[in-house]
Image (cartoon, rainbow, N blue to C red; front, side, top):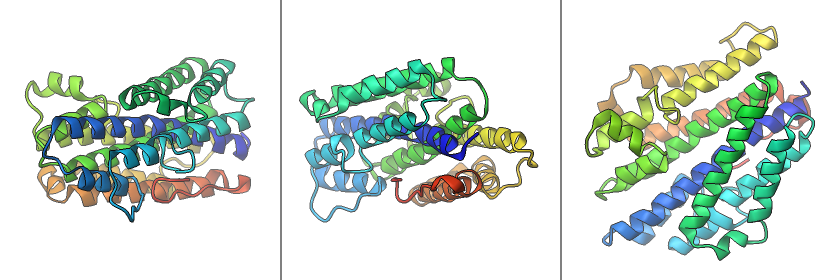
Length: 308
């Protein structure tokens, strides 16, 4: 496979996941502000922007957060900018992306462009982006052959999911004083129903974090996403006639998975924000390693603070 096509598919996976997860974060942020009247809007907004890699020199309110993480096409961390990146990457790989997938991406972009999302209520805009990303992902699942292109797409999606889920958990850790913080965090990850079925009770900080970090049966958990990324790398390395599980990216993912799998949840909860930041840094290192191994000839992209 051409490195240009491989890189485009990798970034389609990343961008679609980033747009969906950013919409989830925004939705939770708005819900928390509504449900908890004593929550400091400025401090909460500032934390969310910093978690997403945006340094704000002013005192942000929820409108600032909506603009920067929602519909500002000039802000690389916004859900609209992320989906635009997916559309551009799909355009560069039209010979590999199925017609149905391209049409779904292009149609969705036409629904977003020109500040059209701002005309809708914010919760409805977030839900629209989330549902459209899920539609595109579903079409990809049902129309793409399970070849190298598919594995690059899955690698990008899984790596981004690790990064974004860790950001969602980090945001919850900073807002832990709010009684509904972890309940809303579970909803942000689409995990509330699965969590209730598993634990059959209210979401405590420890149990919610444990579920989002370590539950193998839930596909959006950090551990499950790390395993999916490792599986995609193994398939790519095997297809390239390399010995599996020997690359730098594989070693980094395996080390992060082992630390989660065999670590103590009590120790993780003690310094949860820092551990989540470390996971994000690991994703950056893995991204660079994958780019060097597979995309070096196509003008590699770099990953810094949540942006490409």
